Amino acid sequence: MFQNSYSDTVAQLFNYQEGTGKLSPDKWPNYDELGITTEHIPELIRLATDEDFYTIHHNDLLYYESGLLEYAPIHAIRILGKFRVEEAIEPLITLLSKFDKFDFKDEILFILDEELKNVLSLIGLPVIPALSTYIADDSHGQFSRIIAILTIKTIASIYPEYYQYCVTSLCQQLESFRDNDPEFNGHIVWVLSDMNAIDCLPLIERAFQAGCVDEDVIGDYDEVLVKLGLKDITDISPKTIKATGTENPISLNFTTSPRFKQLEKLNKAQQKRDARRKRNLNQLGK
Image (cartoon, rainbow, N blue to C red; front, side, top):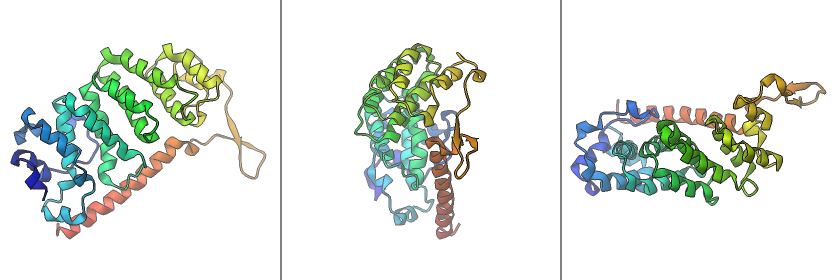
């Protein structure tokens, strides 16, 4: 079983506590109480990326009385972030590939995207080149690449001194707007506008002029200007679509956007996770 592969100190994570909640680093548990130190970093990296924990069988969960075994990688990932472990960057980035199919039926995957963003962001500047390489590789799934983009944005918010590195990295990705998927470009523009990256406007405008930005994600170029505070919303024309079976125009419903559809999937996944947790507790007699 799993405990034979790890030291007793690291194996405490197998039954530590539930790793749910997408906690921000300031709300992580007090991992210091476990006695895990930097000498355990190789084990923590191995645990964080141990495929056995991501394909764990229900019977394995019941073998451990607490039923908390599947959360061990989440705890390991957090501790690596706490220690700012640079050698963990590449192994952790490989975990992004788990989101290529956008399958959130697995509770751990639902938690993992936020944890990876938090931990990689804490490590800081050394993460940016590795994330840039990952984003530029279109053999990776689009959702995992978007998580990488959001991670770069988070680095800029945690370390303002790295802001320009982060903006430059994202602009380099947008330079390939003709080769990128328009929806992907839309997410890059969304993040750049969130970061108030006004210096990138000439590049953003060229991408819009080429018809290479999905407006369902970000709106049109005028709306980007509004978001950046460079244009008043009253100066742009409202966008409309025709209602089915009628000639009356109606306002564009944001529920048609890819972002809203993603939230719908996440909400459904949450319901499935709650039912699964209740089933596990019932089988454990709790």
